[in-house]
Image 1 (cartoon, helix red, strand yellow):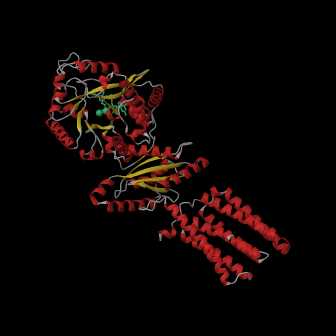
Image 2: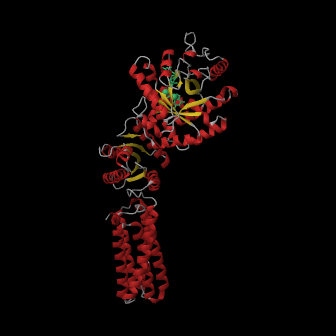
Image 3: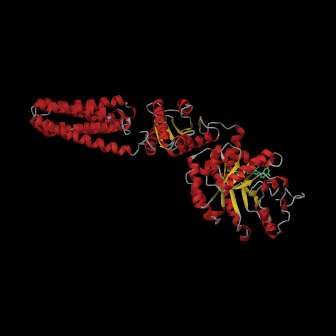
Length: 612
Ligand code: C2E
Ligand code: MG
Ligand code: MG
């Protein structure tokens, strides 16, 4: 039944108005040619009437084109019906048999309209009416007998049938076969159209990206058939709940998109709230409203970021991109940060990571973590825990990440080769950078420009990125690993991700959050937990890094519990390049048990590197 009543995607009033109008006007012009050719052969009065009808058709056609933005589906049905009536009148008034046939030939236009723009049912009604009316008029004149009328009907049906099949084939390329919804290609086309209309009319346009929560669990637990069924029923439920003018598309997997022409982000959130809250298929949604002169890719990217934020902070709800208005102080800080970024006014400090194994305690850092530093002209040093989240929510984090990566690679390459030949560089990467197209190309470009080897660059992503189950972020990480980069999962233990989730991330390092380190030597329960994590990590081929190591006692316990690398104030604070260079020189020269030079945390303290 649905196949009979489904209106083709191309059937937008705007396009239909343009095509119908052009056909109408061309029909009028063709009719005027026929009248002109028939010249002296007919009575002047009839010819004048015909000429006026044709002229009227030209004017009506041009008006339909001009008014195409205001047409409704109902008016378009009326346009086609009046086309049939006009052609039939032309046939009846035609001065001779040839002219009448030429008028009847205009029914081809009606046939094409029906084949391309209407549902099969409506198209058949219009087409049938036009063929019956046209051939009946010809027969009534005595110009055609029954067989000749049938021949004309066959020609027209042939044209309509072939055009309909070709049009359906062409449009199925933009349909998702599982749900029957438009696919990504269909969405792109619909969004492109809607953005253009919104620009012209000034009406709002909102877009949402939706992702089913826990879809993977359904697939894993109940099989792919159950997963497919869930997608189908969800698609049908959502489609029925959304207004007709909204476009619902399936982008792949459990990802959907909604385009709401003429609707604000608030209106779209209202529409989506009951859908994402449906306990049979809960979902998360990110909504964005187009801004002035913003293209389809930009608005989708903002919706994607909003979705990412929702998933990161608890799922099962809708969030609007960039909605939370900044306080005045925040806004000023963001402006200052943007200025500092443009001027390259941020610095990078390096914190060493040491091998935890006693044999590795030779005083040479195995790796360094690049940590961004901002010295505000008025406020002094601002913590990255303040400005990195601001950069994330205000669209500056890509620039920030690029600056840190480039500077760190360049600075480390400026060290003598013997000091850096085995050193790994870890950079913190925001999840928002990972979902941005072209992120890895940017990283490769930096590596090429600076000469830092790909195999010694570690991308550090927080556990929340893994937990968010953002397919694009995970895909970028897999691609990064395939390129030879290393991955580290930072702040592990702060979220709720099960260790088993880590098999989806091609990580080399797992960084235990500082909160574990802080109590590992005082809480036997914590110690047992860390031991379990290190044991499981070994089976997953993950090296466990303990961060936030502030004392020799903690370091010792962490080594015993199976951590592979240690990082923390006890071993070395984040420091500028010159201090790192001194540390590397001292480490290379020092015997295994020498205290670490240049380590402010241990300066003047009795703790020695051998404690590690
Ligand atoms: P993180 O990646 O977990 O970095 C470790 C943080 O712990 C750093 O804070 C470091 O200075 C601090 N730390 C290191 N050892 C100790 C210790 O023994 N005790 C204590 N209490 N803290 C220690 P920082 O530099 O303030 O950075 C905070 C967070 O900001 C980082 O956490 C990271 O998530 C983010 N961040 C820093 N630089 C960047 C960057 O370039 N890009 C991005 N996206 N995020 C960055
Ligand atoms: Mg880190
Ligand atoms: Mg960390």
